[in-house]
Image (cartoon, rainbow, N blue to C red; front, side):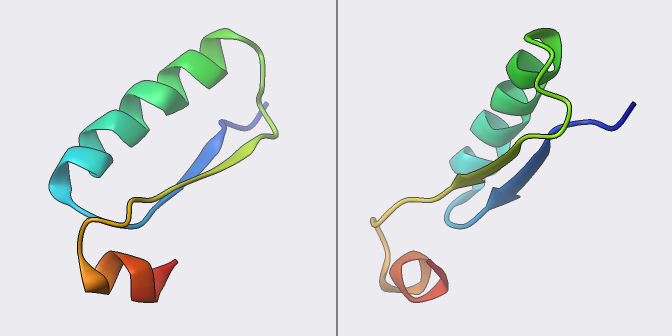
Amino acid sequence: MSKPEVITLGCRLNAYESEVMRRHAETAGLDDAVIVYTCAVTSEAVRQA
């Protein structure tokens, strides 16, 4: 069984929140899910997205 994959773009807070979302997705049985999590606070995050 694989774990949900989270692709994180943006700030350090996003990295923490991404791990929380990954754990919730794993608990919910979303083993093949891919979650893309980003923000638009900085121009670099917008560029990455």
